[in-house]
Image (tube, rainbow, N blue to C red; front, top):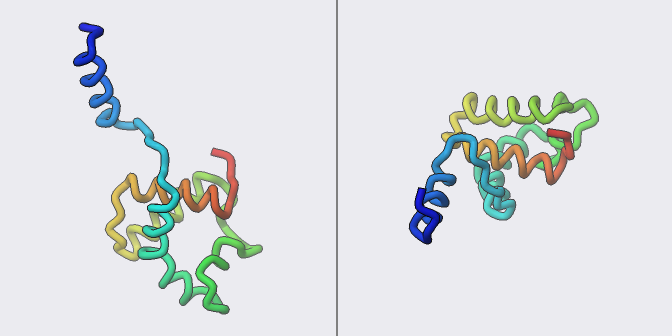
Length: 104
């Protein structure tokens, strides 16, 4: 492999396309996605109209990172939110960093 500038550019381009390569989640953009896709339903499910209350419930079923991933995926499929897999992953990271603090 050529180690010149072109080789580095090609390699950098490939890293973005490799399955499983994880880029950092933009929490500001993901909050907007959360607000657009999740808040209306969560307001309806909350007795107080507080969409974030669903994450702070004492009887929450989300006790692990895997369960959080499952719940986001379930909401996406059941509610036909049309989220891409990377959107789901970004939402999981956002929710975990904002509310849950679960170990990965």
